[in-house]
Length: 226
Image 1 (spheres, one colour):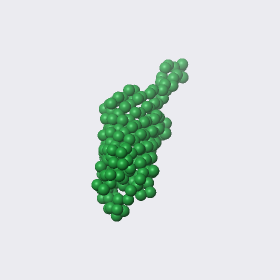
Image 2 (spheres, rainbow, N blue to C red):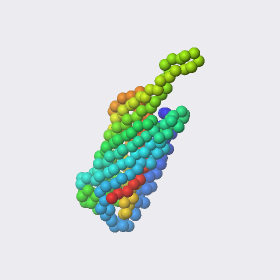
Image 3 (tube, rainbow, N blue to C red):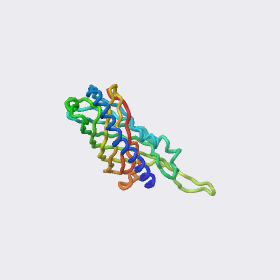
Image 4 (tube, helix red, strand yellow):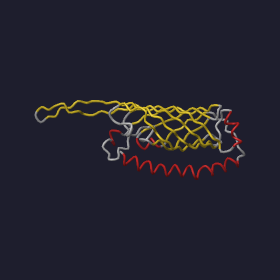
């Protein structure tokens, strides 16, 4: 697990830094060429790409507030490939379960001319943001437990174990909103376990879920603003 997290973190970090370093200047030039065209959009629905790697799905809804900020809620399900991959050496998959998060984002627009638009509760073309996110994950898995034998026959019972995790994440991201509503948001952050109540993980090794990969939360969101 630790080996996978290190490899995954290093690879994803390089990809995200490429987004953060090279993409914003290009998008900023495009926005300036449009003379700060207003989007007039205050809502967004996005899908996170990174959970798909581990057999999960995470969908977000964002609502802009008239304070250079927004609230974002996420719902996800996980464990699509648990039975198929549970014996893999990297343990990159997630257990069956679901995830729910709520976050608060504070924006820093690239173009100062967009600030009034943002303060009126409207998404702007390009901006950085800081996000504080609380995530709840409930997951489970079943095992055949040995209870005895009758001669050569081994007797087992099927037991299902559950775990509940609560984590707090500090996230930095970049958000681009196209003129017609296309939205893209690469992000990177630190995941801090608050409660790990179950037999699978610990605070030092919180495992993977639809919302995070151990102490890392990172990826790219794609969707539509309206």
